[in-house]
Structures are given as C-alpha cells and as structure tokens.
Image (cartoon, one colour):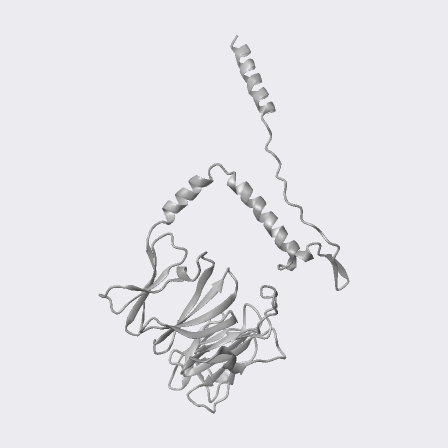
Length: 339
C-alpha cells in the first residue's frame, strides 16, 4: 500500500514537471553582418561588424536602441529586482566624507549625503568655522551626465581650476573659480583630453588635441596633442604653443610644474609605460628645455627641487625605484646622485 502511494505521488510530480511550461527562449535582436575582410601579412581577417564602428550612423543608433530595449525589457521582468534596489539603496544611504586638505588658510573636503550622484566640495575658513558649499558637481546638468573630472589650485591658492566631462567621454572642458569670491571666470577651454592644469605665473600649462571634425568627436584618433600655456583672462585661441612635434603625432606630451611654479617638466609617452623627460627653468625667460631622459624605456618623475637641483624618483636601472638628485648643469644620468 505504501509503495503504491509513493508511486502515485512520484507519477503526479513527474506529470506536473513534464507539463510545466518551458521558459520562453530569448529572441535577441538581429545583428546584421557585412562582407568585410582585411589582409594582415597574408592572413585574411574577417570583420563582419565593421559598420558598427560608425557610432553616428542611423543604422548603428537603431541597433543600439534595439539592444537597450531588449535588455531593459528582460531586466524589468526580474521578480526580485525591486528588492535588490531597495536593499542597495539602504546600504548606500549614509553620509561619507573625504580626507580634508588645506589650500592656503582654507580647509576643503568632499561630502556625500549618501544618494547624491557626485560628492560636493565644501570649504571652511578654519577648523572651527562653519563649512559652505564651494562646488556642487550635481548642478552641472539636470540629468547627471556631466561629471567633475578634477580640481587644480593655483600656486597662491587664489584660483581653482576644474575639469568637467560629459556623458563619460574622455573629452574635458576647463573652468576657473576665484577661491575668495566663488566667482566663475570667463575662461573656458575645450578639446582637452588626459590633461590637468599645471599652474605657473599668471596661468597654467595644459595639453589639448585639435578640434575634431563634426561627427567624429568620439571616434577621432588621439593624435597631434599639443602643449599650451593659458593666461587667465585671455581666449583659448590666443594661448601660447609650448610644444608640438608633427613628426611624432602619436606621442602624448604632458606638462607639469613644481609646486612653486619655477620648473616646467615636459613628459612624453608612447603608451601606458615609459616616458621621456625635459625640464625648463621658468625663472629664466631665456632658458630652453633641457633633456633629462630621451628614451621611453623607464619612468622618471620630478618630485621637487632644492638648491637649484631637481629631486626625482626613477626606475632606471633599478628594480624597486630610487630617489635621485639631478643637476641641470650636468643632467647626464651618470651624474645623478642617489639620495
């Protein structure tokens, strides 16, 4: 009798499983293929989705729209999605602070109440004074697609430059704030990429690319980067060209200055590792760039200077890096002194 009961129960379960509706197979949007083949050193390489590289074409935009619609329709059907959202919101909803830092007499720090898209930069006159908002990146745009890319204080802390980036792009724009009044200056620089502000004198050094052809802003090659010097209160088109080598369009130059603005360092790189280095004494108007490192096989970075000599950290001919002293009157590597 017991065996008969077990048999009936097992049969019932099997019937239910067999008749249970199978999950509906996903119907992915069709991705069109084209007949495109490249030949690399005698080896044919097919590239059937080459047409998707044109991100501004109507076909590509339609493809993206279909892919997004398909993905979102699937995500909306997840039954526990709201529970995940609710729990993550609870975990994220707490105030957080950055480490405070001092610029001149003022103290700055970032604060996020918990659910803000971007942390807000606060300032206070001293450790006991009340803080106020100095820069709120959440007000850059109504849809939250414009982010703060970096902040750069002038040597005397009178100005703070900041970079914005739109919709996750590498392209940057520079703006300048007066730290005394909070007033936004008229200066506005565009078509910057992978650049900071290196302050010295009445302005700062930066690197920028040529303005791309309309429609190619997101697909143009990173070539022909130039280093400029911008004086506050002037237009970008009037900026002084500091460095450009048309023979090496893919070399990436990057300017930097010592904290007191006396020395300009010009770094150049070919990729993610290795850089050459040249230095110019800005206190001498007639000085030229002095080449310190010519190749791209190592990384040498200037930390500061003392007694007209440069303090640098380098990994040249050393496995764990070392700190060295470089005399600009005799900059050959053989004359570097290990600190």
